[in-house]
Image (tube, rainbow, N blue to C red; front, top):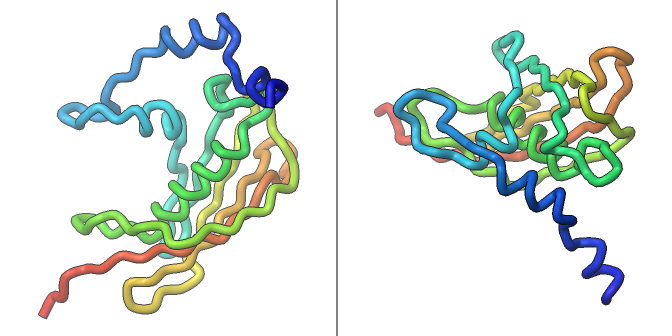
Length: 158
């Protein structure tokens, strides 16, 4: 138990680094969002197609683990955000994640640029399925792949 506790405790340097962070809204007039500023800042949509989203993301120190690799939770978050972005319909509430299945194949480090490709697999009623691939853009190496199921209930247009 003591080993686990010691592993999870922050060093003074890590604590100071977190305390010095300053988060501002991403958009003028938008509410403050720690989540968007911390976890999603830096993701860039490069191309949109009818059923696919192509993004890039540069790995920053704020999302790495103690070994300097992109944290698996950050990878899962990117898969969640891009998968949801594939099926989001403007003017409607955001879909809710129902299930995610992620296979981690490799790791990535600070300053690596990731290519993230999200694709809609299908829709039935309010249920949607997406697939998201995360690759190292320079090497083409597959970092992770995820299947993401979402549900959104929209009001009828009738």
